[in-house]
Image (cartoon, rainbow, N blue to C red; front, top):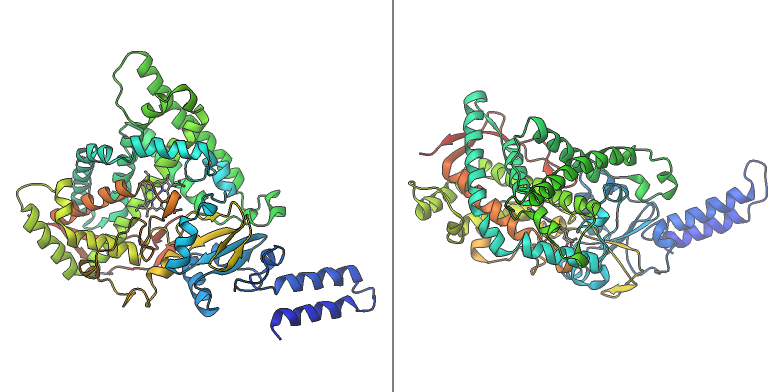
Length: 508
Ligand code: HEM
């Protein structure tokens, strides 16, 4: 007899308890019903669904998603319950499935049934339901994807912005030198965050900011607050009764932020309009692209704010976080850093700076990036989940419409049945086998896969490769006395818990 049937028995027993003042039968009935539902495999939300019991999963409620190591807790649970293919669980009234295996991950990510995303309250309040990442699958979303594929992420556009990325890297190099001179050490993420934000701002808004003062400081505050809000686990998303109360104050903070974002981004759109009506030349940034759309495709001002704002969000921290992990690994593994530098010296030499065109000739450097994406995927749960639009099967399991589906990419990339010595940092593995990270091979798909795969992946990789090459070409990176702490913390992305601080010495 399994424990759910014993729970049924105890419920029946409670039902037939004699009426006493201490335990009125209605309370007994509710307790009984709750305990039956609670002990159902997959928990309460699955018990209330039409799904039957085809998917294994923990009983009760899983609290892991609110923790800083949700990917690890879910991986352990799936392994323990022999549910790596698919595991069901509940958070409040939300029904989840999570895949920790490439075959079921592929089915979820590539199926049109999972082409929607569940929308969290914070994302809704921040207007992201009108931006690409959260827009429901349909015509509006398709238009945004098409437009950004042509005007923001096309190979031609990415190549055209190469010079700009190089200039920003030169500024970062000056910042590293200044920090070494002033403090004798560098807090790497600060430099990278500045570079990344400048890069996205120039591509999207065609604008340069002085960070740390004036408008630049305001922008940094807006981005940081948005990141915190989107990364925070919000109980109101899963327990509808709580959403009235906004117990964590998330709605209030979102509303405060969105009005500031409207003024900020709205101001930039206004500047573009004024320039254009004054006959000034058009830079061709993404704001101009949106303003040039034909009548039937034209976006309202508030939709434009949402679309532009999302790009700033998505484009900034992911790149800075990935580069920080890469640099941390290279500071720890000095021999790997030396090998990458000798590859650079062979290809670039020491009399000129690295350029985009050098990257295809630097396979070891590319392997370092892949190995870091494997060990420290910025979105270990692929950040933003998928939602079943209609009833569907994954393998033999029935998934009712409205179920939230996640892929635990971290569990897949740390599975020793897939990756030998999964905890060890070995870029060499990718010199022996060429694995694509772009979504075709689900053993390593840090940018997701299928219709909603990350549209910024080529731009992100172009930026990360070039900046990494420049930073390694220019400096030797060594640890400070306290070493490097590789502990992680899951917020909106998987970040280093303690920022990397190290030393950088010029190589030439
Ligand atoms: C290292 C850098 C990055 C990583 C690891 C990353 C990862 C991801 C992942 C895992 C998804 C979800 C994919 C899925 O559901 O299958 C995603 C979606 C998305 N990413 Fe990225 N991303 C990165 C950089 C960027 C950049 C630079 C941009 C834009 C400037 C961007 C824009 C987006 C957008 C708009 C979506 C939503 C797409 C949709 O729902 O249709 N990302 N990203």
